[in-house]
Image (cartoon, rainbow, N blue to C red):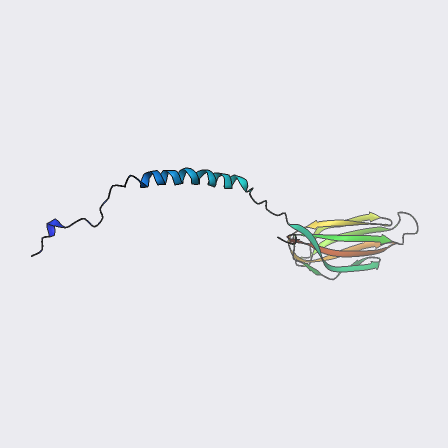
Length: 157
């Protein structure tokens, strides 16, 4: 009959030989400074600032007052590049441009209010949706270009 009382334990802790402890201490003493130096050498990567580009959506032109067809803006930022010409008597021509929601029909923002010949850019910051413009113009020709903002990364990133 086997004697179960005299079994050896499954795991036995052995004393560390004297030559291993100095080797471990030497390896740690050499490795720790190398790790610190390599960490100090590399600067953290700066996050790339996205670039803003502009995607052309549509354009309108005419003389007199009108309401445009609706157009879809998928970004929260878009712009209206506008120009007026043909005002023969200085500053008698007027351009009033109202941005409206094509979903609800409500006015969203006054885009442009200008007298006489000129040009400029109006920026609109609103939720993405379908829009239309109500243009009130007298005694001048007008043209509009609608672009929406798109974000991107510089090439090579």
